[in-house]
Each structure stands twice: as structure tokens, then as C-alpha cells.
Image (cartoon, rainbow, N blue to C red; front, side, top):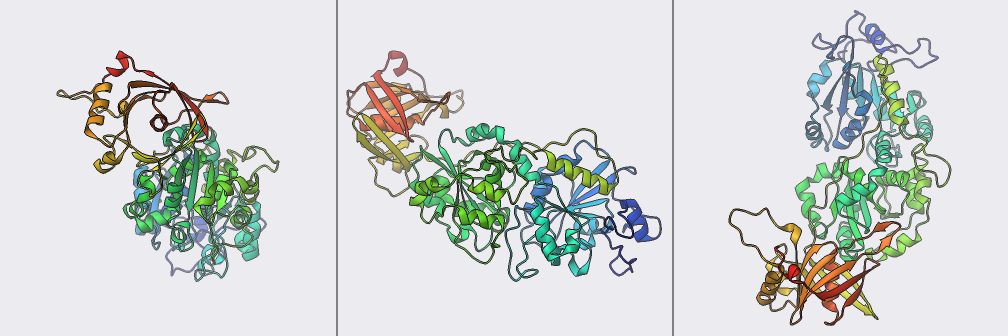
Length: 606
């Protein structure tokens, strides 16, 4: 309906009457006929925005990338239904919308310009943010949150102290109607909304959280995610940073590298989840450059769509500011959560995120990580998450088991009711998260600390570009630069890095390459070749060519491998002539059995 056209009282575009009102809820077609008064859909071009006269049209209106990602999580609701046409549009006015349409293109969806979207009438408009000029769109509107727990307020924006996402000033702009449906994740959120606006709360319903549903459904893929990230038996510590002046990356920009420099590479892996708004504001290039020292140390930088949730599923512990990402981790895995938030004006007291931060150990310095992890009380995160999501009350129960799969089903029933169609017979299921991308960079040189304790050789490796005291520098030949190769006391190579053989090629034998390296680099005392996760060949200068067989430990029916290059550092540090080296790497014992290399081993082609 054009903005200046008089409207029938109580029949504003996108509105419908609640149950018990003088006029009960009307189906979308009836609502439109009453609103237009002419028996025709109120479209700007005389066309109904649908691809099927007996179907329905759905417009997904996203104002930012994160809002769009939330909308993509509910696509299974309409999967397989040819009656429903789906298009996307970008709601103008956000500083963070630059990546939204690019994400639509990546998934192959159709988008329409905002002006065109405003001229058509839709059977349903689905959004994940109440901000922007949504009143210009025509059709019943459904609002989903694009975060968990409604824990933030932004001063100078909207109503004073109102939670972002629950602010009546945005839910009902210019005194207009609230959304036809405000889908929430927890009954307490309706109570909070009712305290601000009973009128807005009358349109709210507890649906659940489709994004949490995807995370819960993907928990069985945890080992696959960790394998893709190269985590192994290491402890994956993930930092999460929201956006804005109070975020972790703004307040403590050096923390990722401080942790990367402090944590032994064979015991820990580091990851970082950055809010999509920060990706949009900064840009991938600038963000990667700012984080370069930590990325060079092997830190995983999760992509803003889907990858972040896969990395959460793989994580062993979380370090968080006041962003709501931590609540998803707490709800799904209930692992240790450490607070890295120093206070401010954005966090709402008493919100689920405030409760989580109030009871989580605070990480003041990177050096205190192990102590903080030990002081975490099991159940702290889950207790906070239970006030943000529908979770079983029983302690120790599988998170989300009682409601897993129900959020999308509830949402489908509501959306099809608003469209005026019967939902498909086939059940709706959450789509599993994708395999995450591996680290973009991995260290190729290590500052190695060695401690001899009786017959045990304790090895800790740190990125080679970290200024830290070390027993020796170990470098991967052909991957690291010449400066570090010249400085390395241990040089090694891996056979799995060989390129596809060309028509004209030169190939080294194991013995030939080791001899070449020792001749070419006078500062190198030990050279070795990693043949497999349990087999290396090495020579200490002046000694015999040795076969190094690694015996990995067994834990709970699993065989736990470490990087064989770390074992080579232990061999390098031990006196020559020994037949066995007991290596302690990442807190585990690895027995390395040394014997003269066979002719087959020394002549193996690399």
C-alpha cells in the first residue's frame, strides 16, 4: 500500500488481529483483500510476487551479513516445496551489508533490488533484524533473532537500555504494528519483551533456535571437523570476538598472538571466530594482515558463515568477550569458557551472557591460561545457556536432546500458517555444518625447548618467529626461508610435500638428500626425513644414518599420533649412540626406537 494512502483502522500492512480480538486472525489472502478494498493484491506493478498462482511467495530481507546467515539456516523449512518461491533482498541502511549479497550469490539464490521488493506484495517477509525501513515492504512479517540471549544494548540507538532485537522502537516503528510473528528461543525472552511492550509480546512465540539446531545435529561430526583442522589430540582453544568498541579484538588486539606465542604447538591449537560485522567493517585482507603474526603461528581464522559453528563444535575451550557466540558453545558442548571482557556499557546485567561472564574464570594474561582452564567449574556455561535456549533441565543430559529438531518444525508450522498453505508431509531436518577450512598457514620453523629428565626428553615447540629462549631451531627445508634454514640446527623434510613428477625431474634418495643438507648447511647438526607418522630417517652430523620408529600411545581405544618432526627434535637433543628415546610431547609419551637404517630406507626415493 502506498505510504500516503489511507488505511482501514487496525489493518496496517503486515498486521493481523490476535486471537480473542473482535476480528480473529485472518489468512493472508483475506487480510490483503480487506487492506486493499478492491479484491486484488496490493502490488506496485499489478503482479503478485509468486511463481505459482496456487503457491506462496517468500521474501528474505537481510540488513547485514549476519542477519542473512541466520535466514539461510531456516531454508530447510521450505526445502522441496515447489509451491513456494523464495527471493532475497538487501535492506539498505546498514554499515555491515557489504557482504550480504555476496553471500546470497555464493549459495546461488535469487535476489531482487530493494526498490523492486518494495513494489511487490509477498505472502511472507522473513527478517532477522527489526531495523531498517521494513514498513515499506508489503506482506506479513516474521522476525527471527540473529544472536542468542539478547545480551547487548547500544546507547544512543533506539530506546534507552532496551536489548538490541527487543526494542519496541524498532519492532513497531512510527507506532506501527509489530511483526506478525516474533520467533524467540526461550520463554524468558517473551517475558522480557512483555515488560517493554505487551503489544509486541502478543505476537511473540517460543520457536527455538535453528542455528543451535544445526550445531547440535552436527555434534557427531566433531572428530571429522578436528581432523580437517589438523587438531589431532591437541587442545583446541577458540577465541570469539564480537564487533564494536568493546569487542575482544578492539580491547585486546594482541591476545591472539600472545596465546600463539605462549602455547606449545604440540599441545594446543588456536582458533578465532570474528563477528560478521567486523569482517564487513574491516575486510578480509585488512583483518588477515592485522592477525598475521597469529595466523603465521597456525591460528585458525573461521569463516563468518557456517565455518565458525564447525570450529565451535571442534573446540575444547572458549575465550570470549560479551558476544553471544559463547552461549552456543555452552549449550552444545558445555566445555570450559573463559571471560576476556573488561566491562562496558553494552552488556545487559542479568542477561544470559552476563551470567556466563560473571561465573566464568577471567583471563587477564595469556600466561594464566592453564590455571584459568583448571578453575572452570563444570556446568557454568550450560546453566547460562539454559536461560537462552530450550535445554533439558537435568544435569548431565545431552544438551538440546529434548528439543533437537523441533525448532524448524515449529517454525515451519507457523510460516505455512501465515502463507495459507499446508506444510509438506516430509519431515524438516537441520542441515549439517560443513567441514571447516584448515589453517591458512602453518609454522615451518620452530623454536624448540628441550628438558632432559632422566630417560625422558621433554619437547616443547613454539613458532620460529617468536622471540623466546630455545634449545635449538628446527626448520622444514623447502618450506621455510633461507635465513631460518641457515640458522636451524635441525633441518627436515616431508615426503608428502612432493609435487607431481614432471617429464624432466630430479629425485633425491633419503641418504642423498640428508648428506646434501649437512654439506650445504654447516650450522645444521641433524637432518631428517619424515616418511610417515611413525617412521623417520635421520643423521646426526658425524654419526650413522638412523631409522627412527615411533611408538605412539594408546588412549581409550585410539592411537594418538604427534608430529614426527617433534620426535626428531628429541633425537637431535639426545647423545648419539642411544637405541631408544622416550619423548614427552604435548603431555604424552612417545617411544622412539633407533637403529641403523637399512639399504632400502637409505635408498628410498623422495
